[in-house]
Image (cartoon, rainbow, N blue to C red; front, side):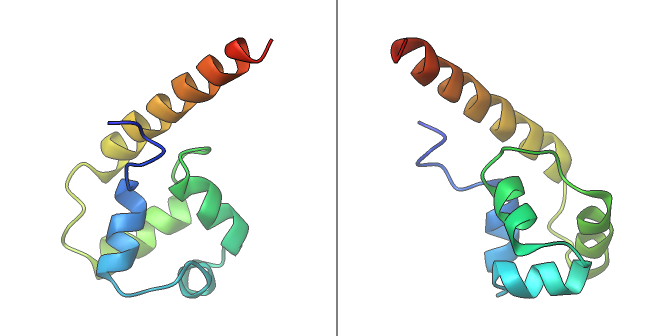
Length: 86
């Protein structure tokens, strides 16, 4: 499955918690844009976000590892697209 069509582990947990990106940003003190970048697999999970999620969700088994795998898939796909466009 193409990771562009795959829902990120972070987004799935956020949706399970019934939070918008903006609500999650307010709860963690992070910007909505930064939450979006994490969900898109462009950046690693922030410590503040991990701490918040640990306090509110029991569905976190392997979230960091799942996010890192998702992020690596995204990087490879972006790299492929960039090399095709050269």
